[in-house]
Image (cartoon, rainbow, N blue to C red):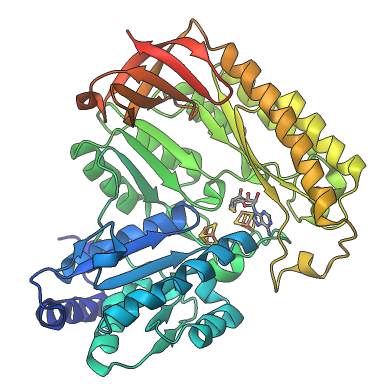
Length: 468
Ligand code: SAH
Ligand code: SF4
Ligand code: F3S
């Protein structure tokens, strides 16, 4: 075994707790494989953390269940990015009270980004006395120890370790999908966009070593994965702080060179660091998805500056136009915020202008949500929620027009698609590299395979087609 893979003493300790729990949990729950229910809110970073937590639960001898009524352990992995996300968690934790009453041994755990905000963790702990364990994103690797403590002492606990800047490699993992998989290449964020809570709850940016990433990607491809998505809050700054000098475009190229038939995707790119070299690597390597998710957030330079995004509309369009010229079949998607503090109608109309100029395939749209502790939370915010909602309506109508024009232009063409799931009896959902869903009549055995689909009919967001 190479030096790199040697077990960390801290993780070794966790393995010991895991072994103990293999004996303790079946006795406590009176079944050989206690049942664990894990629900994930938020982005792919949380999904990736939950896959580790599920891996650890399986190592403790648990069986995963989709049904929280029968669960012995319930865990919610939470998201703090917008107020709406937090409200949903509060609501859903409230409904667990009845389950706890029916089964007093039920172990309810809350983790994730919300728990990294002290005031929220405290509020949850106080409002929901039936929650046993609250822990933050920096201590996920200590989950076995925390469960052990909870079940052996019966005491409640909040554990919010500080960001030690380390990456704990070698944790067990249970991947949710069998042909589409997430591969985190870095954690944290150093960008401090003024509206955003992520750097406050996820800690400083740190990159995994390229050889670990390559090994994991190879193993995934060997075991049949057809799409691998490299994950990070800003993948374009991958490699900062590593001593090996590998940056994102190089890493992407190396992963794409692994033998096998697969699609390679990545999320998210920050426009300030999107390089022409990255675009060239995509253009020259057919396994890399013809898709770029490049959040612009606002079409107004004044607002971009107040958001601390560190690029201008001109710079954004420059990289987009270069990408379009190098990759003619490129699908562009983006995130946009409406109603950032002080955004005037004039600023907002510049956002619409940018959307019309770029013609995104699809957009993820958000109304600004005030996050305590971020600089934007202290900025003047004179517009009402109704005004912002009206702008959002206008934005959605604009995008709908663009999307339907774009999807209509796909009719008659043939695309390579990955068949993903059953839509209904006899019909499967397939997806193009750009994330456009195509419904195709096909038997369920085709799920998880690539196919060529000719587009026969277009709706706003969904296309119909046939396999050729
Ligand atoms: N790291 C990624 C985004 C992560 S959060 C990036 O920089 O692109 C996903 C999206 O949520 C952001 O792109 C932004 O559009 C939105 N978002 C983040 N904080 C928000 C807030 N306070 N209010 C509304 N939307 C927000
Ligand atoms: Fe948030 Fe900005 Fe970091 Fe994205 S880059 S996670 S929006 S701070
Ligand atoms: Fe939410 Fe945390 Fe992701 S705040 S968006 S789950 S990094």
